[in-house]
Image 1 (tube, rainbow, N blue to C red):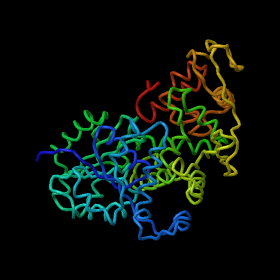
Image 2 (image 1 turned 120 degrees about the vertical axis):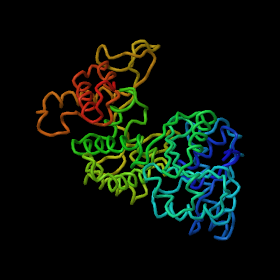
Image 3 (image 1 turned 30 degrees about the vertical axis):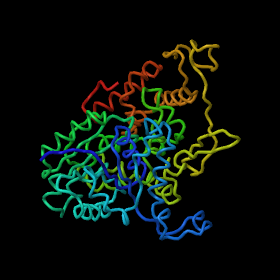
Image 4 (image 1 turned 45 degrees about the vertical axis):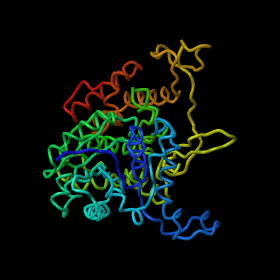
Amino acid sequence: MTYEIRKAAVLGAGTMGAAIAAHLANVGIPSFLLDIVPSSLSDDEQKRGLSLADTEVRNRIARQGLERCLKARPSNLYHPDLARLIHVGNLEDNFAWVGEADWVIEAVVERLEVKQPLMARIDQVRQPETIVSTNTSGIPVGTIAEGRSSGFRTNFLGTHFFNPPRYLQLLELIPTGDTDPELVGFLRRFCEDRLGKGVVVCKDTPNFIANRILSVVGSIGINYALAEGYTVEEVDALTGPAIGRPKTATFRLNDLVGIDVLAHVSENLYRAISGDPYREVLVDERAAGVIGKMVERGWLGNKTDVGFYKKVEADGQREFWPLDLKGLDHRPPALPFAHHCAGHRGGCTTHRPAGLCRRPRRCVPVAHFVAIGRLRRRLHSRDQRRHPLDRSGLPLGLLVGARTLRNLGCARFASLCGETAQRTCGHSRLG
């Protein structure tokens, strides 16, 4: 079969769906962005005298998803004008548009009972050569296509983008036992050459590769922080640029992913990996309590401006208030940011420990040094055999940062990270 992608349909206008549509627009591919129809009017719609039958209301969820995507920083689009390539609609009135697409990408909520009926509807309107993929981050791809026609299953696979799709190069392709090998080869070339992705073909195992590792490592980190009394700021100070990782670190990354997505992924993965020795870290009582209350309160991360951080606007200034993990309320930042580099023009403006500067003209939070110093004191004063997690220090996904920690004067913690890497991954040189 000859495959070609000239137009796409993205089903689900959440954080990922809208951003995928935006990246398709970046390379000149128009798309339909569809989401569910609202069940009630917003306050603004009521004041304007609109009804549930009005198109503006029925397309509201998809339209607002696109608006959030366009406001995101860094920008999801190469240029604002490219937004014209994205056409919003809803899954009731505009579902026939799906039949016009060469590639249909499902990006709805991570629930099998939602995805399977949607696939049945796609199967009814798709063209024989239409490519259908799911952006699930962990549900076994083969189960999503159960009960579909043979033609559907032949052209179906998983395409797991990472957020934000414009900037994160990794794309996991997950074929099933029924997927046409020719399709896998075509889509791999297309995503590498046209979308600029680094494609990894994965087996259809729970959470595939990246999220299988990160879900467990992230859960261990959150559990440890709660058990040992670390604050959100301290954890993110330790696990961000100070060790060569992005500034999203740990808790900011969860806000970016979505707290509801985090909860769904952990729940789905726990059920799917009954033989995994690390399984229980996904259902830690403390962490589940915090995340559950956040979901109940609608604190879903960046999509609601409230998660482990709350965006606060005051006097024209934007601040991000961290969540107090004990009281579950947001408080003003406690740790200041300042320059730490002696080579910075105007001289150093912080009382940094001697010899820590390694990168001229760079700024990092004072919190890095406060948190690392605190960690070193705790590690040196503790019986490392008392608790199995203690032997790895603060296992917050720091494996890749061991070398940078050595540069920051934390040789003890760096070696512990290396030990953790060797035990969990079989590698001892991740730094």
